[in-house]
Image 1 (cartoon, rainbow, N blue to C red):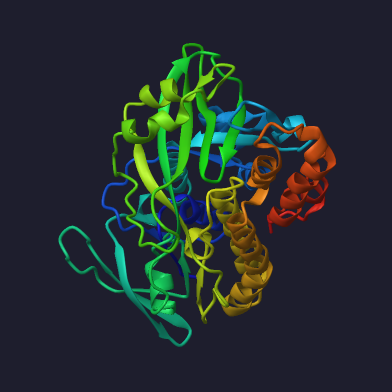
Image 2 (cartoon, helix red, strand yellow):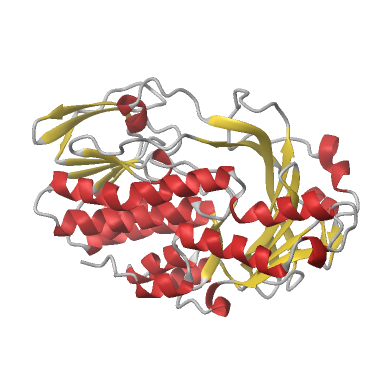
Length: 414
């Protein structure tokens, strides 16, 4: 079976590895000529790490990142709203791992080359169009820098894993337009801290109009690389977003808003000023689609279900897509049946997560806390602990990482 994966990011590469484990030999077409380890930190939740473990990658992933053992939500005045164990500390069979996105992607590239050969990665191939040809699909690619056309490629299955600006999705839904922006900008960076300066936990502070998120993504005997995000409104809801992961900004015009945001070893202003670079990116997503699959073409990851970076579910859900897709392609009687089964399984839950993240997802504990207790009210009186626990647990159920449910779920290894 000739399988073309459009997009060589985390989801496309994981899909290639999952297909290889299932005995199939896909080819990945990446638009960038020379992919670099760009980006900052992401969290891989236990239900994604399970899939990486079943691909034989667990030890390497843990060594590249930081196993996270707790999540803490705080109000801006330092009051703790919710704390819960994470990963193995929470009873999962698999860890939660915070990791540098670019380094993780480069690791996956090396794995694809090792398992499938260098020819399985075709860099410098930007998709311009695809054409169904009965039982196959023809794909047209160009080299983005020069405009040179590559010879057309014919495949039996096409998987669009090319991100929120997916060329595959754009051809399927040409009238969709640009991603939807909620007016919040994510100011992101990484800062070197002394070794053991912070624990291996995720810290969420503030509320939707002003938030600070931080967690370590690399730790050794000499230092800790701390990933952080400052969320602030910069435009009205519905404005057209300027998207560029490499857009560097000066934090000083807004950094004063975090005066006094200090707890434990975390001093937000000091951490932000300690970063070598600060980047701005809008918080964007897209509406859930009525269909991902059209004949022998389907979508995965952010091409299928781009979501707000709330609840750490973006890369996680894409990794699960990869494994589910490979399972169905390896076990169904024909490709179209496989893609239909994949979509039937994955589209409904990811659509629910997209909508739940728009309603703040697990971060809703911060919204409720600030609505009820911002004026200094007793948090335990106005926002009982049981109510907070239910917000956390309901998100786990929707996102598919309730510990018991995850443990009992079937394996995607054919």
